Image (cartoon, rainbow, N blue to C red; front, side, top):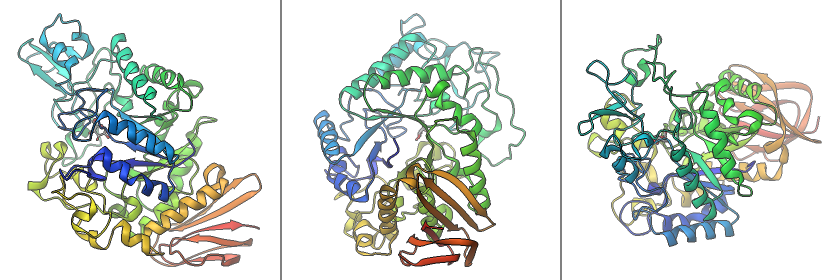
Length: 521
Ligand code: GLC
């Protein structure tokens, strides 16, 4: 759990059969790359049978493999090959909703007295409209009227993603069995999709208006999702998921949760009986400057329950890529931050080679969220483009036409080229990961803030008698950190030079430079 997690978005990682969509055989081919990079586990976004309206987050069979990605045998081969390389495999579990084509929903919608009716959230309308004012994250009401049985069903996302009713015992048991199915097949854990959505208010009370809403923001933000998300009873559900995971040795439960730190940490559960790692997205939504980052690290560390293991994330398949958010130079500082903070870091595929958000023209849009709400900047295709492996056509991703366009810069920004370049961001990531593996204080040590200005963040990581000092310059101008008695050796610069330079009394940083030094004084 203290290792490094790497998110693979399977559609975009490596295509092995030329259909333009990545697949499991492709992932197997690239496992040696992940071992070379030095990560400890990969998390695969959904690979199960799906109509793909939300690219696999709309599941129609929880225990199969979508033919687009391969076969059951491919999956077993992937687990075996990964384990041979000492890589763990984490699957995406999507228990909040299914596809509307899942047999459970087909049955549920067939009649009001079908035994599976209560597996989903069905209600009569109120006063000619939906049962309440709740909104879908993807736009519009979250209630869909079903003309056959004249009731509405609830969907927090697309109307083709009806929410399961987690107040129903049979639903819980069905998903527990799904988990056991994959755990027996050898998976090392789950990343649980939208964990904070699982339980909704029993009375379905209206959500209050959001006084901070500004027109032009996504319509979902018009209301505060007080009654539709983050309900107290969700913690009982998660504790049960944890118990299922605990039936097996050494497995992990990770939760996708977008909440502020004080609410997020509740997902560790009473007596740490909840998620091992409630994903901490603070770095994804923060302004990029030293003071803001120092504050969010402090707030998070202070909020953590005792014994809880922290974690940090810079990017994922739903958010703008880090290199586009903060720029190429600061992306290196961000890499150093991610890999020197206390807790499990999660890398998003391609960020280690500095992949940028790709511009998607209107006719290339695939993301249903963007299709529902064009022009609001919600589109997620730009961070899901094919991995850039080399400078051959389609960046070595596919021999066919990729499902999303390859970035225009792939001829120079790719794994093969960056591997040859000792100063590339890829070389930096490798060096950071190697350093983190070699120096336990960087993974495990206590975090101590030393100094923060508008541009410079300095902290120490300390474990037993080993101490590292990390200095990160968030500004473009040079910066200076002075401390009498400061003494040590530079272990790594984000510029990939200055190795073994002696430090005494002060540390001078170039613009956008980050340094890790072994602290002797
Ligand atoms: C999560 C996934 C996202 C998906 C949504 C609905 O937020 O990360 O990609 O669209 O859940 O399943």
